[in-house]
Picture 1 (cartoon, rainbow, N blue to C red):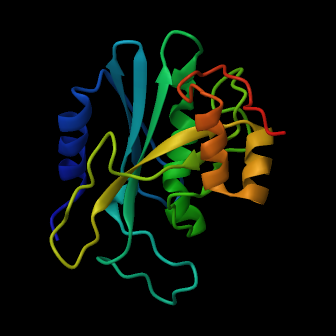
Picture 2 (picture 1 turned 60 degrees about the vertical axis):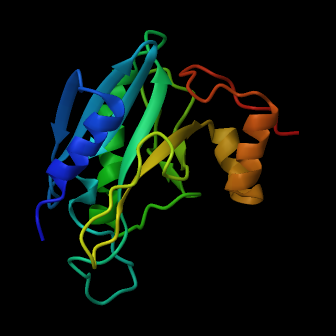
Length: 194
């Protein structure tokens, strides 16, 4: 099968424009993960590139299928100029490497925790993985490979993450919607969870 990453990068460029910065991180025993930054007015988007090179494997499977299985990249959108969000590059690369390192399958509704602030002073230590198909369309690959999904990440405060564990992703997203929460605000407070 042809290398997926040039196709993924082309899809990102088509949807988001030309990246104005990129950084690469390599963790021991994993493939290189890049994070591309796209600026659109006052919104800055960070997209991973490298997570989709291999399909994510079910951790219970004896052998990982080299072709079939879910593939994804992560996309985070925040308001620029409010916080030092460029420091999110390493935490994003860590999340993108988690299928290779920990054998997890990243899917919509999942919570991903980085164990510390997403960037200096951030009130968020984890993200909620949202449904694909909005900002960047899924990238169909030749059969039998699954498409590459571009999964938006929604930053969560520790209180929101704890509430989500009890009530579920859909309930938290409804709270955000009802509360008029600006999920791109890099300094926002937790939504009311009473």
